[in-house]
Amino acid sequence: MSKIKIGVIGLGSISEMHIQSYQKSEEAELIAVCDINQERLEQTTEDLGVSYAYTDYQELLANPEVEAISICTWNNSHAEIAIAALNSGKSVLSEKPLCKTVEEAEAVQQAVTDNPDQFLQVGYVRRFGTNTQVLKKFIDSGDLGDIYYSKASCIRVLGNPGGWFADKERSGGGPLIDLGVHVIDLCWYLMGKPKVKSVSGNTYHQLGNRSNIEYKSFYQAADYDADQNDVEDSANALIRFENGASLAVEVSFALHAPKEEISVSLHGNKGGAVIEPALEIFTEKHNIMFNSTPQIDHLSFDFVQGFQKEIDHFIACVKGEATTIAPVGDGVEMMKMLTGVYQSSTEQREIYFNS
Image (cartoon, rainbow, N blue to C red):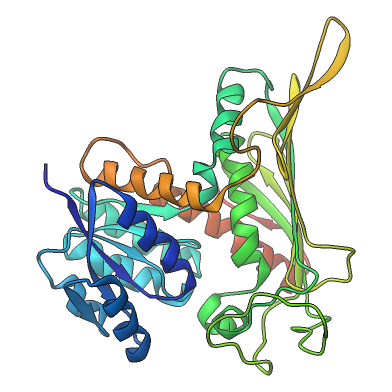
């Protein structure tokens, strides 16, 4: 079978992970790119030697040679582009988050339903980490029993990327929708994706982007502007599920804390596990509690390998050889959780969802 011909829309930093993964794939061929920044588009086109380059994504979607696309644009354009792509006969890999609102997520889901020959995969790349896949084997085999609680922390003390990340209109929010989506999904996926029942959350705007800080470097978006910032510094939440389980999460772009850290753990009635910063499993046998560390190549998430596995899986799904493990419905449920936290903080109450 011939290679699947790919287009990438949006050439910001995250697109580099998609592009290099497509280039390494033996089943895919990157033939088209699109970006509203003409200079960046021309440079990328020259570097990659692709056949087609566009500043209007509609023109890329009109190209009959393109069979599937990656969406790597600002969050506020994800839904619009995804719907247009599905309606034009392209399958879609959309970077997280799926969109900005539940209503947009449901519209994308309807577009998937209306186009049964296409599908959409949400970019929950941490599902493809070796540590995640190994732990899922233990969970699916019942080694942890019923998982009733999980907790996730992704803390940056100085980590507001600025640019569109700090512009709520384009991003939809700050660390919750940028970082929180990853660790919430990681827990939720391993918990078996229970239906969300309610959310109680808080967001804080106390420190700003901390552009005054000296002698400490941090990632900055290509359109970084020290004066641009209307997203939260940090957020925390308790998410309750219909099966009685719960998930506690805390995230930050800016926080007075000792260091950057990521920590994710799950707790069941037969055992527990830490998956970040490194996989370790806890249980008991013969009335003795003990910890075990699997002998695997990647105990923590490896971004390059994770993206390669994500892209390879997407291509296999486009070819009809697999069914995506990150379907559009997961994106809808995630948007309920994320927007629920923001609503809960604004209204200072717990937000409940219909079954």
